[in-house]
Structure formats: structure tokens, C-alpha cells
Image (tube, rainbow, N blue to C red):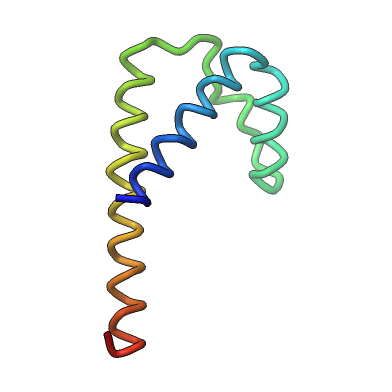
Length: 79
């Protein structure tokens, strides 16, 4: 469950940063994308429903990635 909790926390932090400093957050993520200009696809506002869907996806995908990673780790270490 730690992977899902981590994904959820990161999603909430990201949404909060977009809410309080949209331009700075967009610049930060634009820098992280290694030359891909995400300003062309960014929205000016975020609906609460979009936030909830993104949060659910972040939790589910975080848990899934952690489950896959732990399965690979356990198989490689013989656990």
C-alpha cells in the first residue's frame, strides 16, 4: 500500500502547487520534460472532478508499480 499512498501524496502536492503557483509549477515540469514544451497542452484551470480522477489514478498506478517492482525483486532474490 505504500506505493499507492506515495502516488496519492505526490498527486495532492502537485495539485496544490498548481493551485498556488501555476506558472512556476508549469516551468518546473517543463524543465523536467527534457525539451518537450508542455505549455501548449496545459490547462488554465483544473476542475475538482479532474483532481479526484487524477488522485485515484495516481494511487492505483503507484500501488501497481510497487506491486510489480516488489514481485520482480522477490523473484530475483529468491524470496
